[in-house]
Image 1 (cartoon, rainbow, N blue to C red):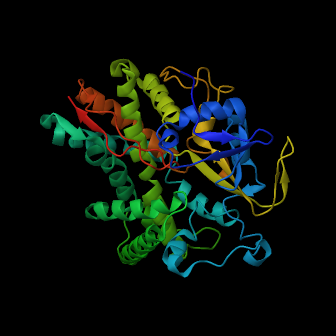
Image 2 (tube, rainbow, N blue to C red):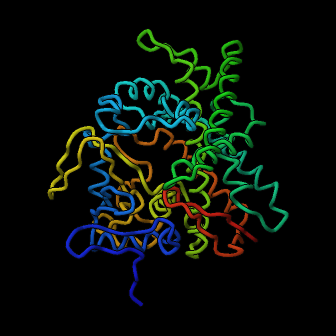
Image 3 (cartoon, helix red, strand yellow):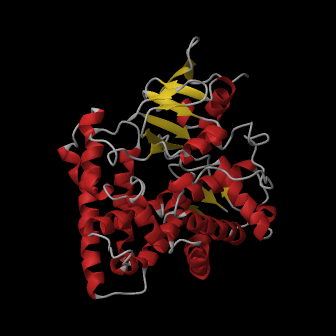
Length: 415
């Protein structure tokens, strides 16, 4: 039966009408991506009011194009751009986001990233291997005798939040609160959040910020061998991080340090089991494990959309004009299944070796935590399947009604 896409394509213009919350779309966006690649890899999304790009070449190039940035207020005022003033009910959320690496542009971005990056280079991250390995085994030991588990809460959530908290020097007993604050804040990145969601995210931001301020104050008096202490005491070109920069950076690392990895672990396990792949072959050695992890990242990416703002008027080849201050959407999930870049892109091929996927982005905003996320996946996935060789899905998982973060509601496993 031919695929009936959940969108309407205009006959005389590359314009698409598509409801983000249509289950036909968010449960299986890849089918829509295939149709878009064939009909309109560049399209104006009517409901979103901006241009979107689905091809690997476009997404890769635009992520690296310095004419676009994560924000624009460093080169133009709200008045110049006709932007509304910040909303008072989001003051705490805006404050904790104000110095986020995700939102800054050079030179502020360069300064912060240079400081934080040294903790995330591969040689530093590799030192975490024994800890991630021990934690993975300990968690599985806690539920192995039960014959079943819900993977996200018993395994996928615990590993990344524990590791990033330990790296920063945040007490482990705070993990449940960190997860709660993070989940509530991340809902702000969904399409058209409700006022209730905004108020809740703002309160979570206020609580998170206050908690981090207390931790930072304690660390100033009790320095330790952790990333937060390094950030507090760092001096680069005669400058140190302000209190606001410390809070924003710590919040970003705690949120980004686990949110996407949780979804990726769940997505990867569900993909492997639903495909009937042989885990012994997938994780036979380091090379096989690396290729399997990269194929899971490509085919079951947890982040499907990044946005960028035009810092100047830009005319792309093909005649598409983006005015200064306008946003564009870059479909990472679609780029990862572009048939001009990947052979038989919808197939799960664990031995595929066709170059980099775009799940971690590209350019100056390439995910700083990519080495950590890859290591957590390369350790936690093989251990899970080796420890539980008869693992299977109790039922096909339900996909979250959230396009930007593609994840599963629950992953019920039995063995």
